[in-house]
Length: 387
Image (cartoon, rainbow, N blue to C red; front, top):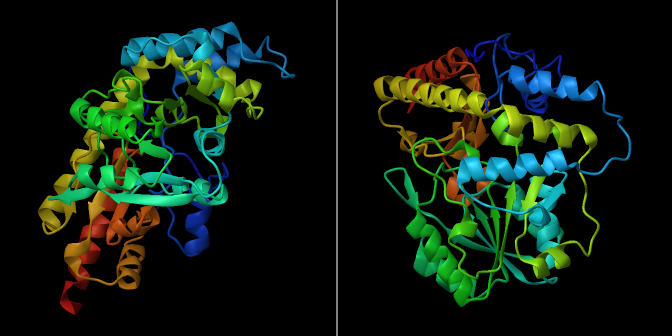
């Protein structure tokens, strides 16, 4: 089946957060410019999922419903088919989004003042939920060489002594790594040594592009851990507010559930079930489109701005671009990017290690990505005379 990855929505008409944020930043933004920041897609919903949700609503009462057996079956089947991961119904805790789920985990598994360890640069809400819970953020910076990021294991080992929890992003946002099995095993060894609980945020785990994603549970080997998953990044369902926390340890489940969970809405549960039941073929096509978009973006920069470095994209649809070679200060760099009518996320949002980088959302029609890369390269060329 051919899928539509070319139709461009009107984000303003649909109330898109990132489109409205773009307008606030630049009220005079020209027509046709698409923001490439927040990690939702500019692709229309897969027809099978749209139809499935519509059919389900024909007979569903939107009341005070609990998760159905169909929802649990869909989650269990998806994890087995996509990740060769066998889970049970009892291990699944439906929740209203991954960030609230992580926030609850931080509160459940640590005390005020405890350290929570992160690998930076990293998804920025990690720091927020740590601080809001009254915990201490402990940072281990990733190592970067020629755009490739790795874990600084000696530093991680050292910093783990200061923490009770490791918030682990896998695949990693924003640098695009899909961690190798051996890397995951080393993380698990350090966690076991220091009696860390690992909250493995795997919201992007369906979006591995160049290698196989390994669920942390497969290497945990007795390490206390929970795994956060969701259909929202995979199928562009962020507004459905639905996610699946997998807690295989009964004692950890009991601790987590001491606070009543934020159960997803009926619509969210239906969307999750329909996506997992019917979205597999669309996902395969989506990943090919992301690869095509990435290749197009890279080709333009390689030709017109070869001094820029783009990290390998092993997973997610978020491209990490290094602009430090331009030698510009933060304000000057942001002004140049704005002059290119490019609206990405700036790297320092993810930690000081990201200063001088931008994160580009590739989940948009290819022509949007091509035009954005052309505008960036042309703006760099036009300003070169002034540097």
